[in-house]
Length: 266
Image: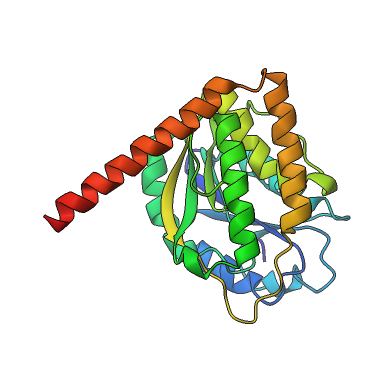
């Protein structure tokens, strides 16, 4: 069943969940998201395992791609649909159970405080449990994307985010099967060039036992992301000020955290 959309004047935010062969987890994730959100939109990216059918009993909007468009293409389709319904903010989260929809109220509180910024659910709590290859790849991505954005990023690869509708109406980012995970990195850079910053809210890093292997391929996808970022930097003469800002702000944030720790122990 498809949930009837709210009137545009009533819809504050919508949740967009891209899903590709997520039959084992998508119903649980969508049902939990429904408890936190006005509207949940699941974009089935050409799944062959019955992902859409698993949602038949839930009041969510299901958009099905006739062919696989990649994560970026699915996110973009869901975002545009949410904007057409009048959403002022679009929440994105993954359908594999690695994001807890119950964290959504904290992320939304941070977004409501500064609704013109992106809020990222940074997987900080329990980060030590992350697979080593993925953790290394994320650190590399944080450095390069932070440089291109001109600010430090704690988790540039987290798909748990809130985007302001005002940004999504202005930004133009390529999306397609070959740019699946590049999209979420490039949109941060495009936003920064429009003057839209990204902030982080700590959330749990969840790695369920028995979960399917991640579609994120550390070597190939980080290579694609690095190539995209390198091109962005070359277009701006390597953007040395961006590197300075990302490192300087990271040092200031670290110093502030140390002071807070000393005060707490004192």
